[in-house]
Image 1 (cartoon, helix red, strand yellow):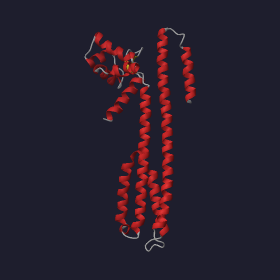
Image 2 (cartoon, helix red, strand yellow):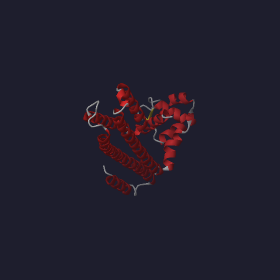
Image 3 (cartoon, rainbow, N blue to C red):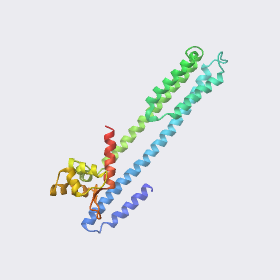
Image 4 (tube, rainbow, N blue to C red):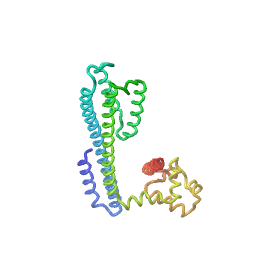
Length: 264
């Protein structure tokens, strides 16, 4: 669904809820807010896809430019004829080597990739000691110079892309509704008892008695905390079994918290 189609659907829903009662209107406005959030996420996802496509295209362009420059350098530096090897074979070998390594490279790991590639190329010099001496050292230096410049350029491109992504995230964060985020996400989980309950419910449903045993709370104290989780739509009560279950929203939130914790 395109951005304009999403916007049109949201406008239609807004018109439909104008004549509803206050309670229904409040619920409708909540839906609208969530749809707006979805729209922002949808747009951000599309922008990130475009960023990746631009990065890949620019990376290919860089490689083509470097290979063209590299061939000209080889033509001017490599002896003709060469006293040790076939000149054309050597040039093709180093051209293919740089092309293959650049195509394997992840722009977000440019520094580590370059360190690893330098180590691999040093092993090549150990295997062929003549690369340290004339005339081979001149050709090898052409390769290493172009290799380093290409990896550096791709790394700088990755930093630029990361900066643009952060700017997009900051813009999206500005649109987060303060009251809703606080009342429906942060505040419900800010109490240790409520957090322990939703953590336990993520492993399966529990009865009111089991929640009481878990928390050590009874009566109105326990009911207050259970109600807060239900109001935030993180927990729901099954009408048939009477058990309390974590909702899809609650489970998704716990998954997000787990990822945040694993990154500490």
